[in-house]
Each structure stands twice: as structure tokens, then as C-alpha cells.
Amino acid sequence: MAADSPTPVLPPADLVAADDSPAALHATDASAATASAATASAADVAAAGISAVAAARANAGRVAVAAVPAEDGAVDRPRVDLAVFDIAGTTVEEHGAVYQALRAAVEAAGGAPSATDIERWMGADKRAAIRALLAAVPAAAAGSTAVTPDGATSDGSAGDGGAAGDGATGDGAGASGGTPDAAAVERVFLDFRARLDTAYRTRPPMPIPGVVEAFGTLRARGIRIALTTGFDRSVVGPLLASLGWDGGLLDAVVCADDVPTGRPAPYMIFRAMEQTGVTAVARVLVAGDTVRDLQAGTNAGAGLVVGVLTGQVGATTLGAARHTHLLASVADIPAMVTGPLG
Image (cartoon, rainbow, N blue to C red):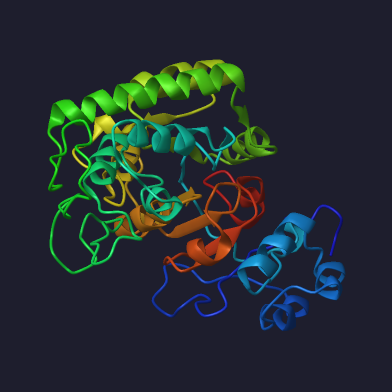
């Protein structure tokens, strides 16, 4: 593989370009044998040009590895008019501060979320996540009813955080559990905001390597760039300003408080299409580092739904969600698409 070849696609071992997926994975003949392996060996890495990070994550998650063709030799690259990216963990390295702050704020309010509980709500509107985490019974409790990413409970009952409580009053969640009131959620949200502000001042967020260059390449091809996020605009504005991304790099930014419902609902993607004048959802690429990002892309009917492994979710979990590609980073996306200008 050429030296400038992109980092490879990481398709899940049991779901590789299903017949009904929006787009098929593209792999070279040389990578086909690699893709059939359960894990990536040192020989695979040498033969396919797989990065050490991608190989390590593939092995950890037992995910098969395939390579993306070099850009100069690629054929039939899909046309994209709009690329929609998540922020934290996808385009911005913030060292896990969002979910550390979220967990700490919920715990301070009397909740007891596990790491799995937090992961379940990654990518969600933060107020919705807080509401559910305050109401949910810890997964370790006998007879607990976990809240799933789409707001349903694990026993099939409806409700965004409607499971019985664990006895903690939770700053508004009653002793018997149940959905906390809006005032309680807002108090915890403000605590979350304060904790996140402190974390960001202590260790400022930075663009993930290669992301700004990828944005530039995509825009040069006429592809519009949008960000969507589970944050509200009061968080996003200062964050983008600190990165220098508020001066024309982006064509649209859609926040959780801009739409009636956040991920996995597709509304932020549709709003980005409205703001950029894109009408063909088949020519929209959606990329993110959480299950909810991929679910939103699928629910929108996006032509490409791309998971990236730069966030807090591992390859096995991310790969279980319907998608068209799994990549090591957003930096690899320009090599697999073309735009209105080529």
C-alpha cells in the first residue's frame, strides 16, 4: 500500500456491508483475506498498512480489519454533498472530560451510574441523559430495569428514565425512583456545566489530529461541513471559539437545544441539511464516535454512516450499531469520498 494510504476501514466481524446497508465497504483484493480474520496480526499490519492504533483496537474488540484503497487508485468513491460530524471524541479531543463531568454531577445529586450507564448515554442531549441517569436503577441491583439509548427500558416498558429508583433521593428523584422533575435536572445540568468548564480550563480541548486538514480537503471538493452535538449552544459557542472554529471553517453547527429531540432522532442532521441547502440525504455522510451518532445517521437515511474510534466507545460496541464504515479517525474520510467539485 502506498505510503499516503488512509488508515483502514474496520468492518465488524459479523456485519460487513449488509445488503440493506446504505453503502458498501470498498476493499482491495489484498485486504480481503485480512478482512476474514478474527483479529489483526503483525503480518496483517505489515501487509495492509494498518496503523498501530487501529490494529490494537481491532484486536481488543476482535474486529476484522480491511484496508481502504489509496486515494489515487480508488474508483467509484461515493459523492457526498454534506458531511455531518459529532464534536467531542469525533472531531475534538477533550480527554473524556464530558462524561467524567456528567458522571460526577449525577453522583453528586445522589445517582449511582456505572461506566456502562454512562456509555449508554454518550452522544445524547445532556439534559435527557441526566434525567435518565438520575432515574435509572444501577445495573448491579437485583431486578433492575436499565434505560436503553432510545429511551425504552430493558424490560420493554416505555420511558426516558422511567425505571424504579434505587432509594436515593437524587436531588428531585424520589425515594422510589421515577423521572426527576425539570428543576432537578436543571440543577444537575448546571453542575455538569461548571465541572466541564473547570476541566476545559485545566486541560483545553484540541482538534483531533488531521481533522482540520480533512475539513479543508472536503470543502475544497465542494462538500459542506456541519457539526452536531448533544451540547446546548451555551457550551458549544465558547468551545468552538477556543478552537478557532468560529470564523468560517464550518457551514453549520446544530446543537441539542436547536431541535425537539436529540440523538438517536435524526433531527439535527435534517436541520444541518436545511441550513446548508442540501436536499439529497443519500449524499449525506454522518460520522461519530458513539452508538447514538450511528443510530441518528441510520434513522436519517444517510448514504454513509461512519463510526470513528477516537472517542470513548470501543470497536466492538460501536461496530454492533448499523453503519457503513468504521475508521480510526475522521482524518481518513477524504480518501473515501468525492464531492460536487471532485
